[in-house]
Length: 106
Length: 219
Image: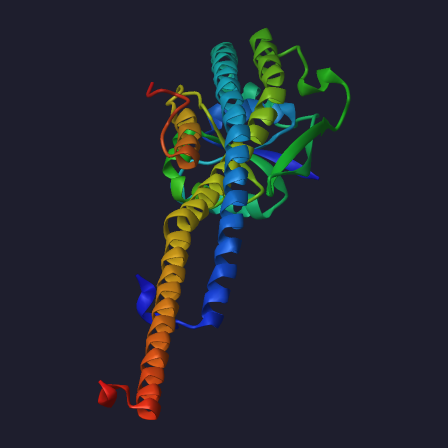
């Protein structure tokens, strides 16, 4: 049995609380890194993270990239879509294929 | 290459030949694995892309609704209304083995079956924009969970494909040519030894005949 967490700045994530996901407002980098570590070791199967925070915590998140769980998935925050979520998908294509053949450099 | 360390013996030759057969067989299997993984990965990553576009679009419009709700409500009221959620989401994860890669399959269920439990507040003091906002998030939730499953699968498969590709390349471009070269070296060396033994024997025979019959003196 796993739970779902959402972390990021408060304004971007508080709505998810109503749906029954656990929200963890985070403001600075250090706090986020610590939080991800505790959540990943806890009973969370999926962790949604806002793109702005994800960009800051890239090193921490990459550690969980190849482990079975948790799935750390970036979502756009209230400040808008930065496209970093798509970039991650692109990154895994490049990793697997050697070059990007899905997005055709858009 | 590593020829200098090879013992040109028959035993070594048999050993290397066995190793080469294993290497070729392994190479073929790994290549098949890579191709199949790649095929599944590409399907998955295409779905990942469309799903992500959909989810990002959904979250964007939900956020717009939240901004609207915030503009018509007091910050405190908004905070209080979402303070104690009634609903909870539980996730059931099972493993699915795709070409030796364990990918997760998520199955989610909520604490209460009532769909209206996402509204954790009384309707008297909140704006209807908040209802819209929460509902729009609720609608995108199944897709979000599916996105999580697919994106994680993509990441895991990408790592496995990378690993397999390296192995295939190492076998194809390093191991197999090296083994072939070593085998060739040993075969040549053994042939050479055989020829030199033959010549030596012929020479010895000549010498013995010469000693017995004294051919050169009779001429």
